[in-house]
Amino acid sequence: MVNKLSVTSEIGTLKRLLVHSPDSGIGKVVPSKAQDWLFEDIVHLDTIRRDEYDYYTKILLYFLDPAKIKGRLAEIDAPENKRNFYKPEHADFYRSDKVIELEWLLADILENYDIRVKLVASVTAIESCTYQVQKDLLTYSPGELAKLFISGTSREKQMLFAPIPNFIFTRDIGITIGDHVLLNKPAKKARTREALLAKYIFFHHPFFEAWQDNIIELPDYSHSFLLPEEEEENRKITLEGGDIMVISSRHLLVGVSERTSPEAAVAITGIMFEKGLADKVTIIRIPRKRDYMHIDTVFTQVKKDVWVMLGNFSRKTIKHEDEKAIERLLEVKKEEKIKILQFHKDAPENPVSFESLEDLLADISRTDLHCKGEVRFIFSGNNEFPYNAREQWTDSCNLLALKEGVVLGYDRNDKTTEAFREAGFSIVHVEDLLPQLEAGTVSTDSIKDTLILMPSAELSRARGGFHCMSMPLWREELSFSETV
Image 1 (tube, rainbow, N blue to C red):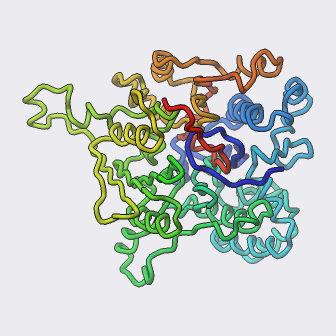
Image 2: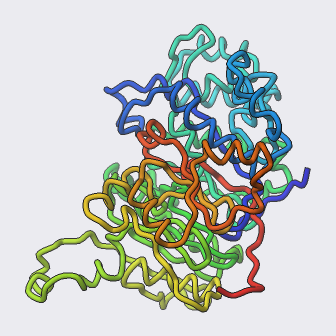
Image 3: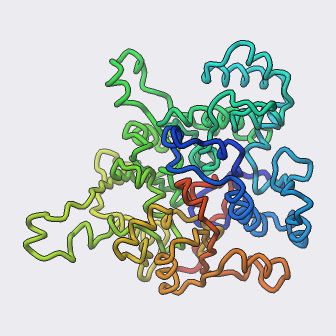
């Protein structure tokens, strides 16, 4: 196994990532607690697993670790095998070192008794469990304990504390920046246990041993605990990975959003410059709305010169170019504001401002990625009202690039799919692609400029796309031998 930690773009060929498949905790989200647990709805567990997320696992394995799956599809999905291939606790689990399951890593570190004692004490403390529960948990096997920490449910099927259903959104536990990992600081209480488990995995699993000195944690302000409660709350450093994009080897994007605070953006910028991890940091402040949540819900990258984005933040919308003169002057349409400042390491006191998100992304393509031709934008819902807002809500802008030009998206976003087709992309449903990959009539190397549509009836209700459901650990370096 080549043990490498390296991410210098959003679109370099994906070689290794962290994922977490939907666990039983998702099936225990109740309507009265759904929003507290950061779910907009309750989802059907068997459907989200068998009919949707399993396809994600299969396509990732075909692209990243085909030896685990090729020639075995019929056997893997045979009813008598009860999905054991997809279950981290089962002996038949796929155990890939390229498509890496977080629950598997957690069970691994819990084999160490000292770590098990510390993590049991930590989890039971933050969940206000009794000392008896703490003692009982020390009798669990590592696999049982890993399952409990994530689902909240004991081996006796009793709910001891809340599940952490957002653990499937592995992008938010941390982000790989070059050969460093920046750990999150969640804004919401519901994600506290996620951050704790992630910290133990990154600091204790042998896989990350070589990079212990490269793990970055954001400290709170010194003596922030002395501030009045309201002021302390307003000045909190909070960060989730969906607000960080490694756009090139020397340029980082940081979102300020509902989940990532301005204080975090300031801290990250300073750390990037001090550690020499970036020459430019662009801070993108988006409206603090649940509709947007992170910057990766309003745009992601498809190719060096192609982006998918929400039209609300396009050049035309920001400049009101489609409005009549009187309407423009009176600002009849109150569009949501976005603020973009780009800080340069050699002159941080003189940031560059961008009027629209479209302007920033075009500049990235030309300046950072050396594109010579037109920079193209594919808009959510094909920029048609009301489909633009509807499809952004179901993650039309939250795409994962398996390699440059080949992205995963939800099949329900019809108008966005139409926009991809008009932009010259091939469209293929994963249900049609997998048999071709299995038969060898198509290879992953031969797939170019393609939107792979994934089933999404239940997954989309969890409010996160495949960009959210991935934490890349290794992408190949982009080649600039040919300019676009």
